[in-house]
Image (cartoon, rainbow, N blue to C red; front, top):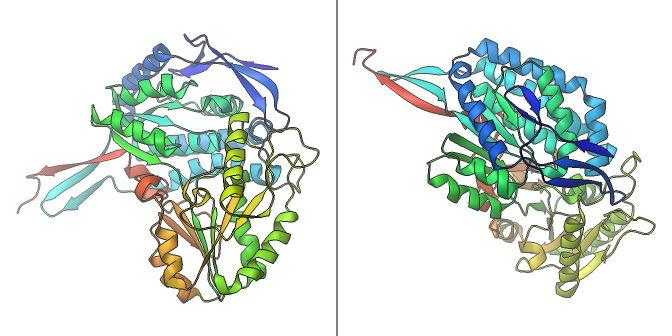
Length: 473
């Protein structure tokens, strides 16, 4: 049993003022593996005050200094790779086949942002004005449980690159991962107060950060419902807010696609991160003329998916993160059985498994107005939606309140590009599942506001200021 009883404020590990204890679970066994003492409102206020004190000096540091910091942070997180990998597998239940990427991503985002900073111009001439990009102030960074370390490091990298100080509120369900990351970042030797990490409940610590008058910027990843509440709270003090929220991503398989390649790729897009991914391609749009072929290939492929022990390299779908999440997914599967046609999977656990495992589930002949096609399930549950022609596929793909990511699979790149150009989504991937860390990431519509990664991600923590009179008209 682990007991985590420290948070990180003003460059030191300190005991929280908060006294609530929260159980930590191994989702593959549904057993308690630890306990974390949660921060409270007073801790959040102390952390914000620390970041406020550190901001004047840190905001004046040079690009060279901040690049050096980011490189030290990258090296420090990379040095804890094995500890972080173990925490991700044990505490989150990520299969090792996925956890390796998640672990490396947490370190890589720091180095990626250092590279962005190297080429970024903070001062530029615009007509007769000089425009300076200045750090906003204290940033509140609120991260979810489905990629704890990656989100902490990614948001913190952008804030630090911009010259902001930060208060991080990670998910209380990911406290072991957070501890490893915090220890690594502490070892990197940043000035006291530049970053503070306070693990606590969203409705306690998160609410305090998002409403605190001394916090200038909020970057949040999580549910659309919570994102809306953060946006409302931020209005009172006119906070700058970046929201990366939910998704119901379409995977459009065009009629010229090689199904032997397209089906495995579509299932990988849908089942990524055990289905607990905002970018999961959970709506698979297929030509009605090829529906029978798709169903046969997809059913066979789903039957071969390995669900189980996250430590088994052959496992690709791990458990849900909690009993609550398992119950949620089961409810949607029952709704799907009532609404549509079950092609593979279904209710309950896979045979022989006791943790919070879900049977990889696939529905077919789904209409886009059904609940399972409209709402984000956040589990390994996919819907096959038939369409008649490309135009209808585009209409169906865009008929959603979300717009985070989409996938287009085709044997004709020019045709795929024409379809991709008309999809309303922050990212559209054509015949690939690749990630580009320098490209902006974020959503249209209710998938969020603003972008992360690359220049766009750093500029979310900056505000332009124009100086006039320096140059002759």
